[in-house]
Structures are given as structure tokens and as C-alpha cells.
Image (cartoon, rainbow, N blue to C red; front, side, top):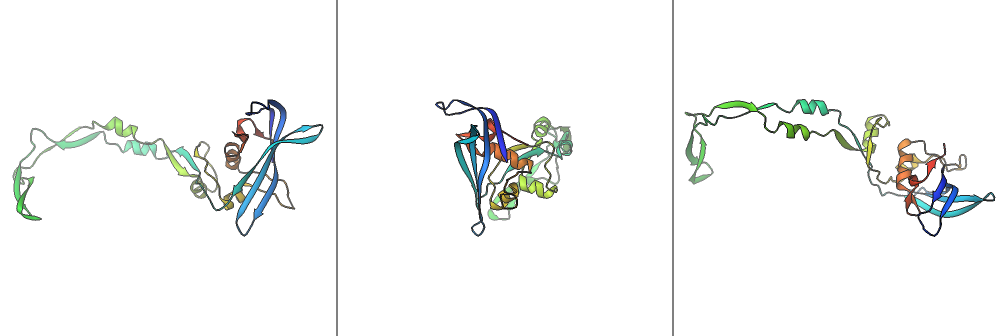
Length: 218
């Protein structure tokens, strides 16, 4: 797995600009019993064919996990809007009915006020005064946990979504993100599109996310 920046401007003011800078995985370590996965990345450029390392960083994945959240379109939006009533029933102010006082069943010395059954109120239908506000309150998008969405949709992301929180994967999830890194296949690959997006936004070198200046070499 390799990322490339044709022109890299270091955020460190004393370092200046470099051409053809790469980020590449250099070490992968798996502590199976402790369930710890560590991946080290190097940022480097070539000088006379020899890599010159500018900085390295190690991402460690353990039992700690922060759930990734994505925002997706509310599939029930129109149905929820249609369910907002255009009209409501209210007590007719001209025929509000009467009230009587009866002994309070929970307090022998007190009384409570109740509607008078001999003089009931009447209801009228009016335009819902809160209709616009209730429609505006219907969410157009919903925030859902990423893994929950994948589990419910055969591992497929929606065509349109927005990441609310990239989270931090635990050992098991990171092992799913990264493929390779063993004797049979020493090169690490990231086939999952979200995993690539996660790495670009959540892995840092020289105080900048990978994706600020680098892109994957396919």
C-alpha cells in the first residue's frame, strides 16, 4: 500500500517543499494473544534511489473502539412528512362546556375540577398552526453506526453518505481493514473503500492527515 504526493509542502516551516514524496507501510506487528495490531507508516522521498525518511508513525489497534457514525438519507422522510396533520381538533371557544367540582378520591378533604357531563364541550377542526414547524422538524438524514448499517445491508455502503465520526477501529475491525502483511503476502492492501477513507482522514504525519496532500497509488 502506497500513497503519493507529487509536490509535498511540509507543515514544518523550516523543511520546505519536496517532490515525489511517498507514504508506505513499513512494519506490521500482530500480538495475537493480546489482540494488538500495529502498523507503521513511513513518509519518504528518494535521493539517488535511496529512501530518505521524513517521519514515521505507528497506528495501534487494541480492544479500544470508537464507533464510526455515518449520515444517510432518511428513507421514511416523505411518509413522516405526510403523517403531519394539516388540521387538528380543538375545544370550541364559543362552546367550551362546563366544569364541576367533585371530591378528590385521593384526598378526602379536597376537591378536583372535572368536565360537566351534563354540559360537555364541543370540538371544532382548525388548520394546524404548527404544521410548517412540524414538517421542518422531520429529519432528512439519519445518523447510524457504520457497522450496524453494513450488517443490515450485506456489507455495502449507500451511494451517498456523509461521515459524522470516523471513530477508531478495534483489533478485529482493523484486521478486516488491512489485508496482507504476512509471509505469503507481505504487502498490505486496503480493499474496503471506507477503510481507505478512514486512513486518509485519521492517520497523521507531521500534524497533517494523510489525505491533506497524499492520495492512494492504485
